[in-house]
Length: 270
Ligand SMILES: *[C@@H]1O[C@H](CO)[C@@H](O)[C@H](O)[C@H]1NC(C)=O
Ligand SMILES: *[C@@H]1O[C@H](CO)[C@@H](O)[C@H](O)[C@H]1NC(C)=O
Ligand SMILES: *[C@@H]1O[C@H](CO)[C@@H](O)[C@H](O)[C@H]1NC(C)=O
Ligand SMILES: *[C@@H]1O[C@H](CO)[C@@H](O)[C@H](O)[C@H]1NC(C)=O
Ligand SMILES: *[C@@H]1O[C@H](CO)[C@@H](O)[C@H](O)[C@H]1NC(C)=O
Ligand SMILES: *[C@@H]1O[C@H](CO)[C@@H](O)[C@H](O)[C@H]1NC(C)=O
Image (cartoon, rainbow, N blue to C red):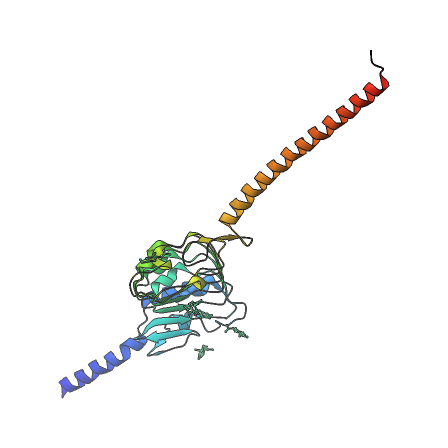
C-alpha cells in the first residue's frame, strides 16, 4: 500500500515538474531580447518578467510570437510588428530555437555572430529591416539552416563563402543590401544536386558581381563599353585636334599666300 502511494507521488511529481521548471537559458534569452527591442506599438505588452520567466506551459506559450516544444522555446515569430532596437546576442541562449523570424520590422544594428550557437536553427528570416554590418560567416556553423533570408537591409561587406557549406540551404536571399565583392561559387553556382540560387537572390547590391548576376553594369553600361567609350573618345579628340591643327595651318598658309600676293601687288618689282 505504502509503495503504491509513493509511486503515485512519484508520478505526480513527474507530471508536475516540466511545467513549473523554467529553463534558465530561455529566460536569459527572452529577457535580453525584450530589453534590446523597442516596441512603440506595445505589441510585446505581455512579455513581462513573470511570463518570460516561465514562457512555456506544455506546448503553448503565454508570450506573443513564441512557440514551445517540450518546455523549451523552439520558434520565435515576431514579423511585421513595427519593432525597433537591435537583436540581442543573448538570443543564442534559446538553444532549442529552430525558427527565428524578425522580418519586416525596423530593427537596426548588426546580426549577432553569436547566432552560431543556435545549433538547431533551420529558419532565419531577418528580411526587411535596417540591419547593418557584415553577414557573420559563423552562421555556417548552424548546420541545419535551410532558410537564410536577409533581403532588404543595409548589410555591407562580402557574402561569406563559408555559407556554401550549408548543404541543407534551400532558400537564400541577400538581395537589396549594400554588399560587395564577388559572389562565392559555393552559393552562385552550387555543385551537384544542391538547390540552386538565381540572380534574384543577389540583385540590388551595387558592389556585387559574378555568376548568376549579368555582367556588371554602371549606369546601364558594361565595363567593356566604358573602356570602349574611353578609348573611342580619346582617339576622336586626337583626330579632332590633329585636324584642327591642319585646318589652322592651311588657313595661315592661305593667309600668308594672300598677304604675299598683296605685298607683291603693292610693291613694284625691283
Ligand atoms: C499574450 O498575448 C497573446 C497574443 O496577444 C495572447 O494569445 C496570450 O494569451 C497573452 N498571454 C497572456 C498571459 O496574457
Ligand atoms: C504588415 O502589417 C500591416 C498592418 O499592421 C498590414 O497592412 C500589412 O499587410 C502587413 N504586411 C505583411 C507583409 O504581412
Ligand atoms: C548567453 O548568451 C551570452 C551572449 O551570447 C553568452 O555570453 C552566454 O555564455 C550565454 N549563456 C549560456 C548559458 O549559453
Ligand atoms: C521572410 O519573411 C517575409 C515577410 O516578412 C516573407 O515575405 C518571406 O517569404 C520570408 N522568407 C522566406 C524564405 O520564407
Ligand atoms: C558552374 O559550374 C559548372 C560545373 O562545376 C561549370 O561547368 C560552369 O562553368 C560554372 N559556371 C560558371 C558561370 O561559373
Ligand atoms: C529565381 O528563384 C526564385 C525562387 O528561388 C523563383 O521564384 C524565381 O522565379 C526564379 N527566377 C528566375 C528568373 O528563374
